[in-house]
Image (cartoon, rainbow, N blue to C red):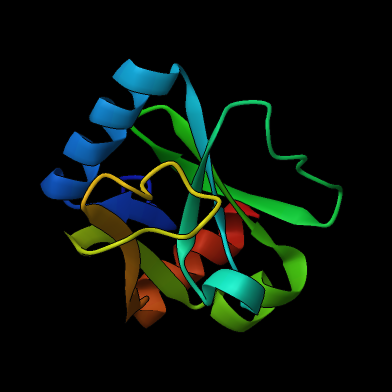
Length: 123
């Protein structure tokens, strides 16, 4: 495989919502929630309003919006590509998608053995 394998990607509908949120709030970023109040949902924040720590893992970006996940959760999901999508409903209470009538959701697929080999060699 000669191309870069994305650990996180988004559907066109999710990218449309990212663009709408960016136009309203300025630059944004994502953190994949691991539970608690909002369950396991991708949370969208204004850039700089969520403190990324040394234990968080950068997975990539969605049209320029950085996407992070906690290290412990990443160790569980590292064999999986995250596919960010949207569905009708309310977003997480702290996420910018709340109140838009749409909410981000995470779909996933397992990487193939070939993809994992490429990802492992890139680490």
